[in-house]
Amino acid sequence: MGVRGGLWRCWSYLMVLALLGAGPAASCSPAATATASSGYSLRQGGFLREFMPLIGESPVAAFYNYLDYRANNHFALPDHSLIFLYRESESGELSLVIIHDAPGDGTGGAAIFRFSGLPRTAVLVLLDDDDGSDRFSLAPPQGEARWYWYPGHTDGLVIGGLGEQFEITIFPDFLWGINGWDLLTGGLAAPVTIPLPSLSEPLTITARNLPPRAAFTVLPPDPCIYERVRFDATTSRDPDGEIVSYEWDLDGDGSYEIRLPSPQLEHTFSEASTHQVGLRVRDNLGAIGVTTQPVVVREEIVSASRAISTPFPDYEVLSGGTFRVTVTIEAHSTIIGLGLDEDLPPGWEVRPLRDDGAQFKSSSTQWLFFEQLEAGEERVITYEVRVPGDARPGAFPISGRVITTLPAAETAVRGDREVKVVRFLSIRVAISRLDVETGEINPNLPNIISFPQIQFAVALWLEDRPVPGTNGKKIDLKTMVELVAYWLTDTPVDQPLKR
Image (cartoon, rainbow, N blue to C red; front, side):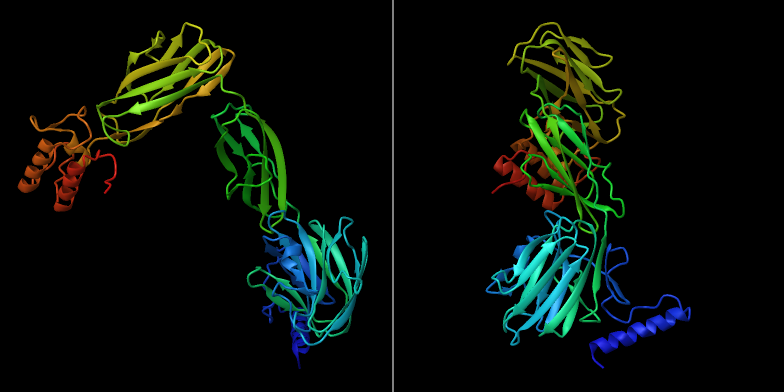
């Protein structure tokens, strides 16, 4: 019966079932693979298929790859014509592609197509062949193409500038050389071929996808350099689908360096200037929405950096133990009126060690300076913190801000931002802090294992006794070998061993 006869029999069967009220019937053709929500459909007489554009990274002309009077993209089929939509992933542009015949086929051919319903923005991107042997006239909404190709060659065209909503009707007239007419859909790596039932009936391609709308907010709206800026694109919307990716251009060069599945992004700028920040959102059909807005980044009036020094590696401190914090404040212009506000967990005691002339308020852990600072001057605040003995293990944040009056600013303190409270130490750390005279942990000892400490560790291993400060942990052979390696190489216990 042939392909067309089989399709007609399948279609007739489905129509009979529908008339008898049999309800939705399963497709009897593997071609019906696109979802009903694809937003794109092709209709030819009673034949209707939803389909998806092929999406590729290359511009459509490069994808068509016209050379030596041929389309060199490995999709062309001998004695067949192909029709499909192609979307360039970078720009989101949608194009209509038609390819007649395949390179190397031994027969030539000829065809005439008339178009109606072309968007007013439609443009001819590529004509195969543009040497006078083929002719194409474009006057949207109308258009006409006349092709004649020799054996071994192909013919076709690319029409771009379609937008996302259109209804294009094509009136095909295959004069000779073509006996199959196919629609491509699905993924670019392995597209699905859908045979069309007629070589002469008009077909209509309809697009009903609404592109997404990009929008974002910036907090703070007027950041300083090195200040953390939060970009939030949750106000972006897709009217008829969903947004699947958020792409950010943070340096204004037109290249979207960051692609995320979620709408939030944090970033710091290291240069004071106006930065054109771009957002590109992409919906589930590949359409994009783009917006840009300027972000004015101010020069820092003052900067502050925090350094936390704990008695144990990895910012660890025992419950009931102490650690030291140093905040260095640097003025970048003349400052009149300066204060530091540090925020620690409730119940943690603070004892100032260095204040550089500032007045300390213990109830709120704040320092007030009474002198004018000139550009380049520094002030250093150092304080000791005692962790409550009943503090639960875990990571605890420490944050802070510097406040100025003239000029007015509020800047977050950068640098170290948390300590980890532990109740017990690892064996390696405990041995490096072990006072061999008393057999107890001394947090003030260095983090390098000494010879007396390695001797003490060997004794604990031989006698199978627990290590002090570890909640009863004992040294096995593997751990003992590691302790010896740290001792022999004088490697600090908070660093990995190196050969």
